[in-house]
Length: 343
Image (tube, rainbow, N blue to C red; front, side, top):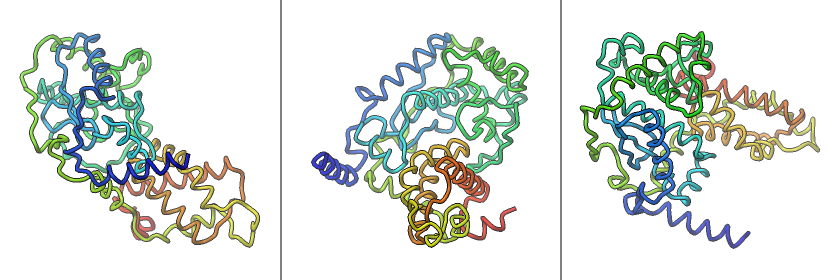
């Protein structure tokens, strides 16, 4: 085990120092190819002739107005996927990757056929020209939107609403009519079903033309380490702002001297906490990871101890973390002022 760990540390350092453009990453022959082939089979099964081209980029995405699908470069190489997991706590498995591919395919079809220009599209989903905001308020009780990507992502923008609705419609084995029976969102699914039956066998008028500003891996002239340094720059400010909250969740050392250290508890449950909070908030795992790591550091500095049951402590930490991250989504900050004074 020690030798393998040492080998990985050496390989890891070598990867961090290499430029992404020099890694020779390709969709063909990589794990991404099988995912793309599965997406294309699903499109075939729906009678859709258009197959959105897929390229490797820095993140999931579809360039605005261009029917291309960008897939994170780390999915094309198992070593890079391991590195991503270290930084982001988890890396997409096959099911999650296909979920994102279906969503991005929805964008691609919207752009390829300029569906957003249709009056009926605008009536059902809203104006495509609506301002696009990374942070958005959601109504978790709303049944006017489908639920596909966690975080009620369809509520972000009309374009995302369509992409999410397309993804649900495309998902194999899902009886969307039964799943959304009685929901206003069903009308959106019926629209997608109808419009894709109309255009499905017609080549799209908009061609997919890759360009350097779409950031394919060939244009990523920075190192893997520089790519991940971006995540470290997103750590919240004011490290001690949550000390009082931690002291409410855990015990002071004099009250439970023999109990497990809170920092050790947070470290052993780090992955589970990050996944739970990211799922319920829709925030990226890197941001949630930054919060959990900050809490871990402060719990260590305060020498706090676990005094409750494991399950109840996890529930309390999940609830607390979810509240903090949702505040972050609305204020784009985790400093003391925004947490205490945000409306």
